[in-house]
Image (cartoon, rainbow, N blue to C red; front, side, top):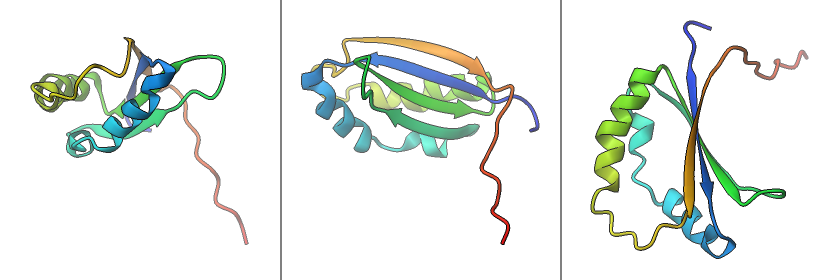
Length: 109
């Protein structure tokens, strides 16, 4: 792997009555992140047990790419969105550096 990607995980505390709202908002999002320079991956993870926190997983080429998206397209997308009350009651962002990764091996045959 060339360079070390970074992962940003936004842990969102979502009350049970707001889960559907949160998921709808993400499914109808503008999709700006996918065309952002340095963007590598996105996943919205729904909790199944043990927590009420959704995880928003994004992977970036580097911190600079993430910051450029955060201060540009993401900020613009959230200004004046008028989406009503926030679906999440709290948010915490975690940052990780990818030091190892693995992908499925192709099947021989």
